[in-house]
Length: 233
Image 1 (cartoon, helix red, strand yellow):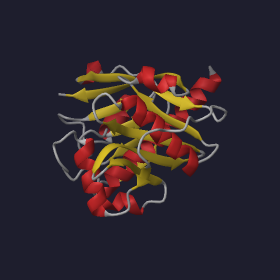
Image 2 (cartoon, rainbow, N blue to C red):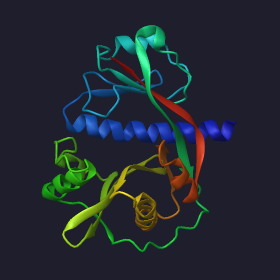
Image 3 (cartoon, helix red, strand yellow):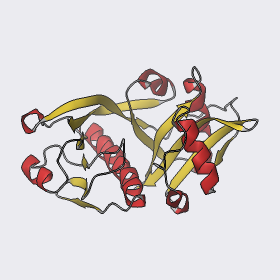
Image 4 (tube, rainbow, N blue to C red):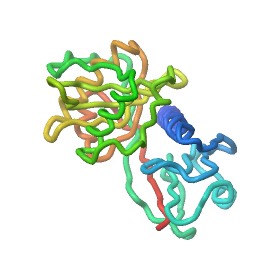
């Protein structure tokens, strides 16, 4: 249980680090204090206003430090909070995942995964990530200048067919925003992990997953406990 708690804490802190760089790229002030990462003003779409880093932070204190109006979301990293009494509902549940250092990485038959360096490349990446909705400005070019962040894409001819984000923090690498063309998610994970293992050899990979949990488990990940995301309608 202590090992699982430690792995979950590492994954939660890594995810908070990714949320932090995205929020700050939009000019949002953030801080980590009293066991919680918080944004002082509303975060960009799809990103929480707070991420808990300990199992039981003081909820009233947490809500006072963020914009807790309608639309507020909180990532309950240990699935221990009851926020229903405060007007929240569970938006979704998932599992933290970690991948051991001794798990071999299979070679990928997918196109070569490359790192995005230019703002135009990132805009094309976001358009592919959105599933055809186009670039919305969620992922700002500032992210490309952060050493701890790697935005990856796989190309076929002149189009992006898969992508992911790697975030380095405290001895682990977080894998997030994995996407692909329909029916190719398994190959996308294999290609992403093959590239990540060359960029960060012998580093534990972490993240969280819900709908594709069976795929990531087949690629050497283990679960490290549940999480919940709460939202106030």
